[in-house]
Image 1 (spheres, helix red, strand yellow):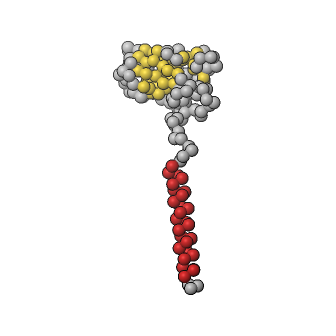
Image 2 (cartoon, helix red, strand yellow):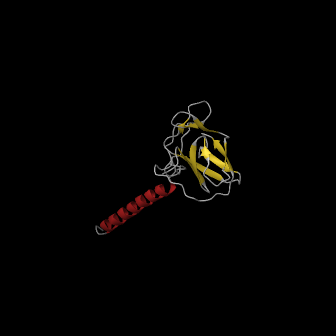
Image 3 (spheres, helix red, strand yellow):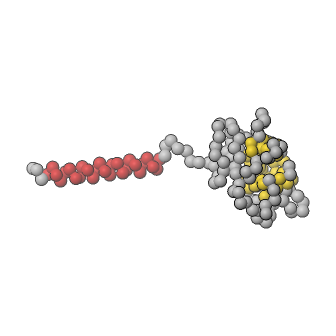
Length: 159
């Protein structure tokens, strides 16, 4: 009879260990309390609800010579949306908008983006026409890198 107890004890330990591993695996798979992040890599940290946060471009941004098929853009700013700032091309394509570190969220009653001098660069509903020459557009004196899926606004033309 004493031989049966030691054989059952290791079996019981194995069952408890397997149950623990299964519980850990189940918890890792469900992730019940943590939603998936929606921010893009390199974007700014989130702020208080309703606060405007700019998606940031890398400090070493360069523009590709990729042509685009849109000729005009309309910008949208909504602090409750994700992303909070985006553009819609006249072709119907939604474009991400990223900013270099010289731009900040405006402090006025309406959401806006300001440059390092405090001048308003962008407000909800602003439009931007693409130059007919195929050159890069200018947003209130700032360089805009265009691409088929997104824009990057830079304080100056990249070197």
